[in-house]
Image 1 (cartoon, rainbow, N blue to C red):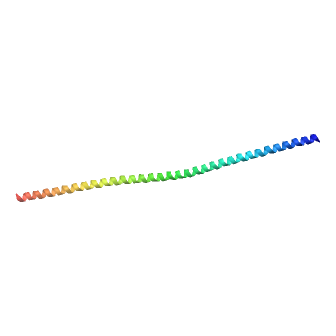
Image 2: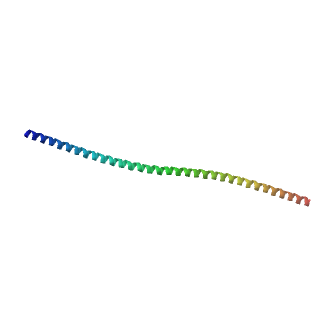
Image 3: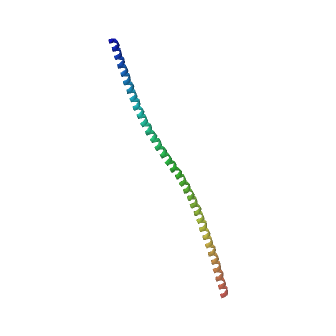
Length: 119
């Protein structure tokens, strides 16, 4: 009976020790899972933040491309206007020179007629 009692006592201690180890292992697993969950939440937050930034930069790039196209169109219009302005200036200069020559011919003809009338 004493042997059986001692054996049961040893078995009981072994079972208690095994349960204590199981509880400790369970607590360590829970702690590890909690830490892993926190890391995953942080990573998920970082991923979401990166997506927001990526969307923002994508919109900025699209906006910049549109602005570059507008700038190119503006520069082309400015070039066309400058060419048109140069043509108009050249036409006005040619017109002025033609009227000046006509006025000079008319004046010369009047002077010649005046000289011929006096002679």
